[in-house]
Image 1 (cartoon, rainbow, N blue to C red):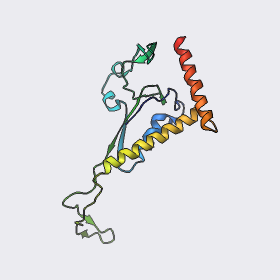
Image 2 (cartoon, rainbow, N blue to C red):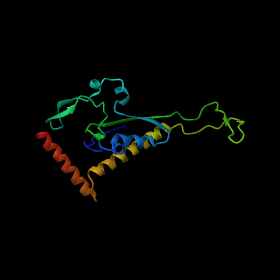
Image 3 (cartoon, one colour):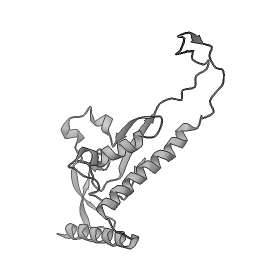
Image 4 (cartoon, rainbow, N blue to C red):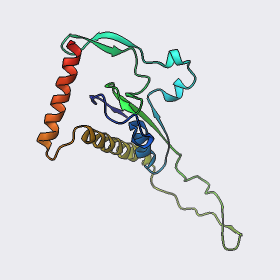
Length: 177
């Protein structure tokens, strides 16, 4: 999953349970059948040196052709130190295989300890991966919305929108010096 145009600074660097990567990981791992989550190139980075795993900065042009500091890569997946860094958030989730096997696996009656004849019925959730993708996308969106409201809180949508605009203006002022 990729979430683009997320402002920098969402999340928290201080407390482990408030770090955005922790929160996204927990939200995605709460989806039934999901057994692993990767943010950015986490697995690939584990085999790299620190120098190679670092997302270095470069001067690039933004949409209006103004020079700005950007990244050579997005190995961190848009989250550094528990907070968004302005790059797209890239998240990969892995789902366990469906439990149905043919021929059916045997079992044991827990009361007697005796083998139970395998059940020959088949499950019909062969599209679980596609369904999980929709649920993961929603879980990710909800967690990002929560982080967004924590940073840009307000009682009305107009107040939240105004807070976002003020923040965006402060970022632009930072660009020009």
